[in-house]
Image (cartoon, rainbow, N blue to C red):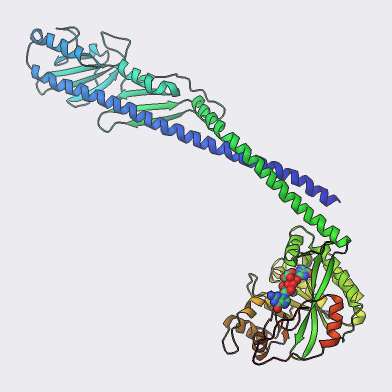
Length: 534
Ligand code: G
Ligand code: G
Ligand code: MN
């Protein structure tokens, strides 16, 4: 009972895990998705801002190009025109002319005095270029509001300048970034920072604020957009809000599926246990023909499961279920009990083979030797030859230990056969290292036989291999006279299949043995005999 209980507890854990899986995956995916969405928006916002700043620069340089028509004219003469141009065009704080480092004319102050450095409240950048622009903290007229100064110096000492008010840029940043809480900043030629947005960048949970910086290819403008952690969190929460109901549904579905699956698993175990107790299992036996003795040389035991309502459960289904749920050992032990009971009623010659199928797991089991020895002891007086049928898979897992056990049993006169040969994934080296007596060629290869004179290369190779290794060969699933004759011609000693006899229950077997067991199998030449049911 204890292992069963542990199984159930483990089942609950499995159901909880199944429920958590979609949630955890969902939370991770939405976090990644939110971060991705936010950074896409961030990049597109930065580019929008950059484009706007470039457009303003275009305007400023256009304006400066216009100003060149006033070259060499005295300020008094052009002051009105400057004033009009500076006021009627958008963005400009002021425009004007230079003479050396001095302002020679200004749309705001007329015949102003003072130097360029005084107006922009900082020394002009040393660029070595005739064209330059720089962002500044303020200008003499408006010292507390940032601005961008554009200057064009001519080869003579004169030049032109324009100042764009930073407020336009700040308003623009505000308009495109406020709803998303972005902090944005912009610099011309690494000058003063023109920025907007909250300056709070305190981390939220484990999220950090994310910055994105980009630069113009046409002008010395750089733009920085920072998304505060709180915004990332907000985007994540929004994604979760949409996703979580879906995840919850998945979660519940997966939990129901897992619970169902577990119940089915547990019920297979219980069903098999109950069926053993209720004696629903029985053994059928399929005779094996020997070409050497021209008579039945033995039989293979095949487990059958009939429900109380008469329904049969297919062996491949319940055998693999039993293997998957750790029930194959008790089931095989039960098989040995049933066989020992049946065999008591047999009247067969000494040396009659009785084949039984063993699962890989049973070979690994500590009780394996004892189980087989007890069975052998119970039927000892019948002097049968017990043949252990193993699959290729059983030989791969812990081969050394299995080989030791097989050697031990062979020393007591038992035989070892490889069942379904050619269907497992195997390296063939085990043919040399394991103590073997028979190879049972899988019926797939027998099916490939097309006619007596048509070669069947793989089958022929297997048969030759057996002859070389001095292993006895058995052909499984022989259904037609052609297949039978083909195998007989190539020296296959043992034949098993519907063509010779179907699997039958114990009473039928006894009747069959006494009636037909000693008769040779004659191949009818011209027509395929119909298969007769057992
Ligand atoms: O005739 P049949 O449908 O019985 O066999 C289906 C499969 O079940 C075959 O591969 C056969 O080897 C396997 N099988 C039948 N009886 C037993 C058994 O008692 N033990 C094991 N391990 N396999 C069996
Ligand atoms: O894997 P193993 O050899 O133990 O399987 C024997 C299986 O082959 C059993 O299911 C048995 O009923 C089936 N069997 C035996 N003879 C024939 C046959 O001639 N044709 C077919 N299709 N199955 C057969
Ligand atoms: Mn078999």
